[in-house]
Length: 340
Ligand SMILES: [Zn+2]
Image (cartoon, rainbow, N blue to C red; front, top):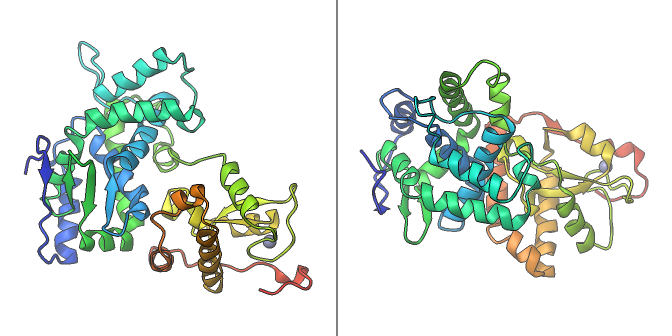
């Protein structure tokens, strides 16, 4: 099914078996599915990394999707110098590469700068340009490749709406599908780039959108609560011993969400790393988020606009289903007089 020039797509909502869904993925990753550029892989990553930003109707706005898409390509093209299309005789770059290079010159930005470090207005502007260009074909192309069962979309209203069966399937098999996507994406990039630029390629794809600076979240949480204790061990926090932890590991969610951040001491943060916290802390996080919502500041309201207690509990189970079996428990012997 060719979908690249469609204005809208209605999702086929018939009952699908897991076998049928796997066979659609086999098709996407097979040579029968056309790919002159790597955009299909990048767009699938943008969906997977935004999977838990869906609203109650499982919708994702183009703004959200293309912000991630832009970040992925900004870093791949400028930071890692990876071409996104085979070199042609006239050395014509893809339109995405052209937009990024144009903005680099227009804003006098040095090439090594990561997307994270750009000024917010510049980020929004570049994202808007890429969205206007890519919504013409990328969204419809993946819709067509998935035989119209993955999502409905509207180019006018600028959203995709995931098929509920697909949302559950993607959640249950998120890590495996992500790895398949990286594998095929890396194979494609190896074909169109030289050996030097493709070193550690799988890691580059996996970490292309990882943030270094979480201080904005630390500040929000710090300002919101009078009592400043480590979420896990209860130890009192001070400015020199305070860190921000992704409660459900970043490596599973692949995004930064206030509802998933907790303040911890550095000992707990170092010990926890990529582990899932013991389930008893899940109730604590649900309660913490309830208090955040109750405080009702605009910033928090915006950050928690797609948060639901049930969704958090489901994501916790899906992380476990995806192999996060190593459970973190803090060393509470060092804490005196703290109720957990
Ligand atoms: Zn601690």
